Image 1 (cartoon, rainbow, N blue to C red):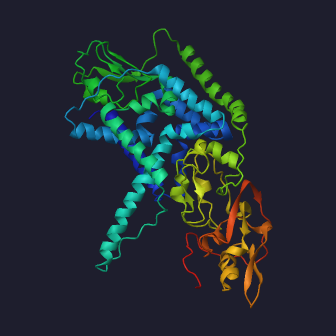
Image 2: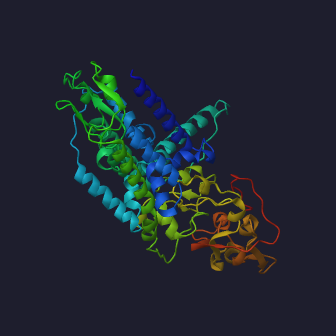
Length: 503
């Protein structure tokens, strides 16, 4: 096997396994940098947050040097496609690909439309085709639930023999909309990869379109030797990008993903990968192009940032946003629905949505207090978000961030309705924003001190009232700062669940 191809495979395996483990929550949040080295999340950070500019420029510079190695070694969605392609090589009778047409006009018009919607405040269309987000949804919404289901079946099986060496996996509730979407993407991308190779990367992928423009001018290129090549077509047959015209001995560098399959497949050693500028291109011309490209991306971030922030979304009854989201506008405009926060939430209160935010913010996560609640001393979601939709927030800041306010409907309360003791909302409130005031027959009924309520949802989660909760949280369109609670904080270890009731 060619050394370059072997090196590419090793890096790809490390990348793929790392991302899978990250979404399974095996890696601690320290490894969030894996998400930040993805092109489109880095681009969003540059445009909207003026951060991670260095990471973005490194990815561009890497492409200037070596071509689209990002697509073959760093992008987990691209590597997932390579897995399907590997199965084609192993099990299909027709193991070869055909040279593909470069749909250049369609690709750039299509990707331009995605970014126009993004800059106008609608990130949904971009997130639907963004490779990293799709990989995250596939792992978190399809692969992970299936893996956990199988794991828990083995747990039940081994328990019958008094064997307890496998731990039961805790999963969030099943959401049909997000599962169906992720599963369909998984099936479609699998079929496309099996029959058409990297068709998605060279036709619909926004990252591929950006890097394709740059790779045309890359320093290191794969080249076909006119002297050694006999036009046998073996290189084109193993080219999963379909970018080799073996009759004319040319390579479309916009489509080439630098996988080095062609070098490994050529029996005449007629393909090489080296440094060579075009004969009519001086070193000065190349440096000028490079500098102009970098300056364009850096300078573009300021006006586009202002444009992206021009539209404010208003909802009559907003759902609750995670701490660090800051505002509905910030969250909706930056979240790419990768669900990394969902994967790492210890209480599973962050869950996928379908249309709760509206179609323009399809699949973005929300705080689901019917399922769980937000831990008082947890900020994990803010540490893993790759786009700044949930900005980093310290534990101290989080404890005073008011993401919503609890409201009380007395007629639903079991104390009022059944004249029985309860007080769970008071017991589990970490700031003691819910207190019990005298009611009758020695009972206490909830009263809310809204100034110290942070909207964590513990009260709503434990409220036994059915079918409608007596206490619930209304989200803040823009997060506020709560007053400092006075003593008597309820302490609970990270990850500890509420699972007991006094009746």
